[in-house]
Image 1 (cartoon, helix red, strand yellow):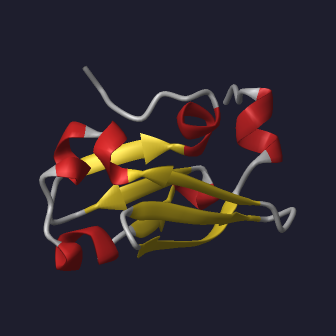
Image 2: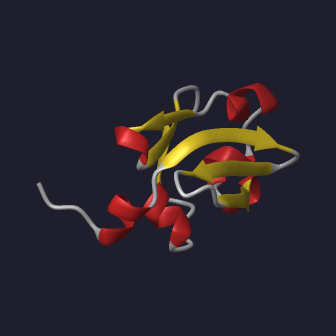
Length: 84
């Protein structure tokens, strides 16, 4: 199986929603935050839907089951917040 370097370096250990931001704690203890407005599905979601975020793929992705939305950690780091 092939991996991108970012997928090996950046793994999420905790993900949560706070005050209009998706917040990630990485395995190296860095935090990343981005506004939900950058993603079309997250932008229109309720607070309960935003809070229901799961860490998937061994820490390399995020999933919002209520919204059927997935984002990769490497994509977030690269500034890709939406699948248009």
